[in-house]
Figure 1 (cartoon, rainbow, N blue to C red):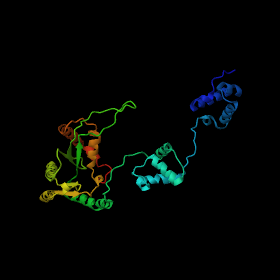
Figure 2: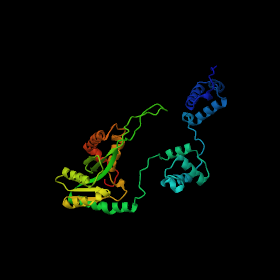
Figure 3: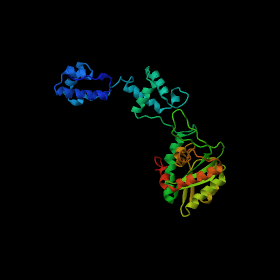
Figure 4: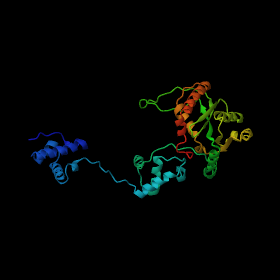
Length: 340
């Protein structure tokens, strides 16, 4: 007589799967169904069902299967309709701000279908559909999409032809402020105990100008004050100095300092080997040099420990030089842009 063990129904699905396989082994050795059921602590009908299933479909039929769970409340067409609203910002549907949250999606589902789906299930659905929460890119209200498209269609081909005709070095130029107050990253710490990081309480910063080329070249300059026309001309001269035997084409935004008369006079004086083209207003995404600032601030200067502008200048110079020396990194700033 087989010795009985504890109630098998208290075990996990994987453990019960092993029960079924063991029950088949005992049955094949001649043990009675009642004794097997008593041994595993299950009803004899369960054992009988295992044996019948095994005889009809083999051992594979006894493997544990994940329960399908209840049917999702939304139909396929309703799911497609809900996902389509994510293509527009949330203000289009009456919300105060443009970002979508699971709570807002839940409210939109109720309005459209009258069905209430828990936010957890909405999150699971979005993951299943390969959607993820993302930080959006900023676009100015003043941005003119028609002007951007026109620039890409007309001005950019003109720049490429000019570059090819001159066999020139093409640079994209931009300026950015670097603050003494650093961007903070993440660090490991016990749950519920938010760590503290010491940073300077001083205010201040620097202005950094850089220009990058698809060839992997980079030129930069650091200013403690604001960039004016004279300082911008000095930077343009710096680019020319780097390429004494080459013609230069620079693409930059339309900031007021770039449009100063001194700049126009400088370009006119050097028009035989130097030209400037301007990007449309409020279109930073057209300038690959913007990626320099993203990389510098989010990675190289994250949680920096500079206490004053002198320390910050020394640190920024060192980090910019490390970028400048890495031609592959500079070239990577052009990946997935219209330039390459």
